[in-house]
Image (cartoon, rainbow, N blue to C red):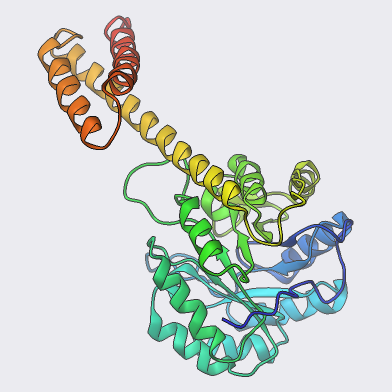
Length: 364
């Protein structure tokens, strides 16, 4: 892909010009007053590169708030005129893209649902062919790296070189602490496959709740991502979409202030060193192991409740012996030592038994 790495804002709105790209604003444009109030407060924080807002909102079920439509683009134009902040919005089809460009939106992003559909991406690419616009492409909802790369390539082949990817996490059937599973390894693989491509993280959609947004944002910067896209609302309590994950402008400014930019190794030349990549992959795997362990312990609690209701013994020796025999054999086949696997299983089993015993001894 031919990429122009100069994705800096039209004007420098950051207190520290060395900061990564910071895109912030409400999930949805709801009123001109809401847009201007949020934008002015973000501008005053000196911690924003672009102002974002959702004009059209692709929703899972009909009847949900699906955005204000074209009038929101008029509000975006007002925000840009009055605050000087360059603007960004999502486009889901060619008509959205045409209108956004007509109203002077600086950055378009292709959402996760749209990037999963090559036909829709191609229609957008054909519409914006040759336009001097920056385009960001979110990862598809499903964890398919080639589909993500394919969407980026379609936009790039339309002559768009001001291009970046957005990592916003992936849908997962199983329960996780996050709204969308981060699957950092996929973002790292994209970085390895396309080292010239900037990657921006959307911690709001990964977290799903505002309390986890700073954690995800710091992790993204630790993984050498080029920036953040964060949902910020002047009054999240009354937001018409994704209220739980939006930050107040003051909380956003505090988060950015508290984030740490890691020093770059002198030996690093713009791409991850092999050692860094290995360590980041280990961190990603460890995160997954912790999530799986948490899910396993929750199942142990459910088993404890079932045993209590049915007056069953906590320790089922035959079941434990079966688990130990099968898992040790599996570990051996996968190249792990019997002693390591047995010790690990014993620790997990001990914690599981303790949790079940606590439930059995709870007073009604």
